[in-house]
Length: 121
Image 1 (tube, rainbow, N blue to C red):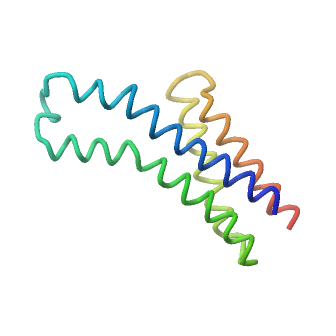
Image 2 (image 1 turned 90 degrees about the vertical axis):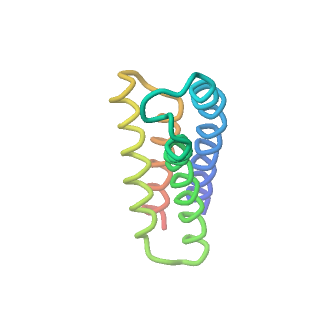
């Protein structure tokens, strides 16, 4: 149970940090600039914002899903899906940024904690 709780905590922390920091550092300054091209349409701005926050929703939901699944004694499918999403996101960050990223490192830790939960239970 400890490993599942750790995975959930890491996933929720990364999700919250990603949404809060990216909103302040990327999206607000981007939308403050004069709209050009695709971002001229208000709908496109809304879609861009939603798509930017979607990984955060997925990380948090999967993290909570891992711990709730462990509490209920369900099969490990949700944990395997979470591991795939956490690891793919971390690797995607590494490839895109060409350097380690704090969020990516925490997602790798969430992947490891989820794997440990599967192994221990």
